[in-house]
Image 1: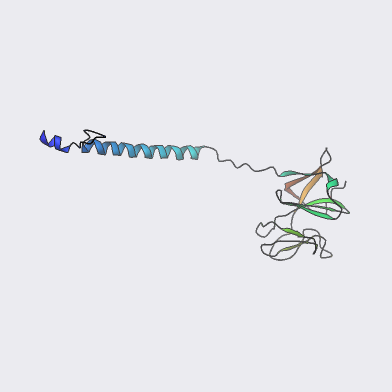
Image 2: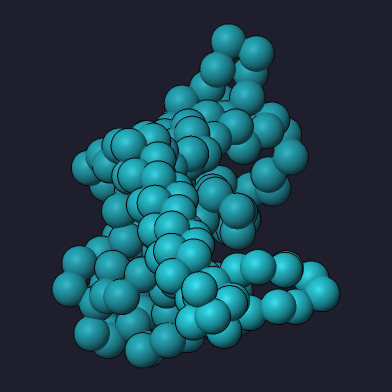
Length: 171
């Protein structure tokens, strides 16, 4: 009986907790925390992991807002809208080398990739089609994207659908 009284730890906060009861509570608490963590990870694993991406179809506005012989970069949509004598067309602004955003260089009449130096034709060099690669490591030309005129008279571009070059939207 005296030994039992000696094993009891007397504190003001928790009177009468012996060693066995202390380790029992510690073990049950640890198992509870581990079970809660497992439940959280199981919930995350079982819940759907959905990526919400913007629509590949982009409204580019009225054709009147584009001047003749203009190249307009839409940074958010990552496309160039080009208006020339033949009509309108859209080019992807993403370099086919490593996916950098290309830039229109009006003084040179080309599209250039600032990352690794690929150059794509627009109005220069002569004899090259718009988007065609003529310098740098890019393996392919910039793709032409499907473009059409909506019922409301606005230019619409589908970034997910590539077309063969030289297909223009005439307004």
